[in-house]
Amino acid sequence: MLVNAYPGGQSDLWCAPGGGARRHASLPDNLTREVWEETGLRIEVGAPALVNEFHAPDRGFHQVDVYFRCRVIAGTLSEDWIDPEGIVTDRRWFSRSGMDAIRFKPDSLPGAAWGEGILYDPLEPLVR
Image (cartoon, rainbow, N blue to C red; front, side):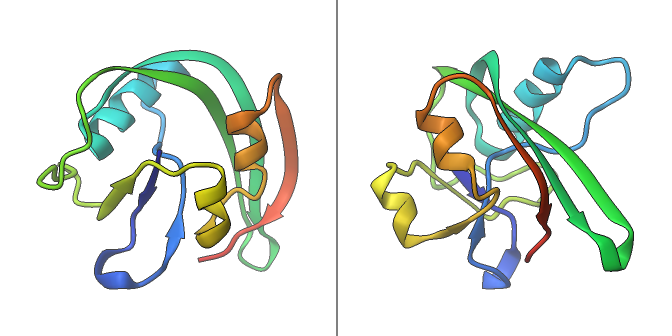
C-alpha cells in the first residue's frame, strides 16, 4: 500500500506511509500511528524489511528510513478518509506489476515488499 502526499497533483510520486518519530515511542508504535493517520488502517508491525538513506548533498539533507513488514488487522481503504494532518492526498494498494506503471521511492521498495530478509539501500538521491 502506497500513499501520495502531494496536494493538487504537484507530484505523481508514491511512497510507503510513514513520517516523523515521536520521542519516547518505538519505531513500530510510530509507524502504527502514522499508518492510521494516513490511511485509516490498523496494522500489526513485523520485522524490518529495508533501511534506506535519502540525501540531497546540495541542501545538506540526509534522512534514514526504516521500513517494516506489516499486516492489516482492521479497516479498509476508504475514498472519504482524510489524513488529520492534511498531508496524504491519495492511498492505494499496488501489485508488484502495478508498480511498473508508477513513480515511487525508494527504488528498492518492491524488493523489500516482496522479498525476504532485510535490504540496505545507501544514499539514494532525494527526488520530488
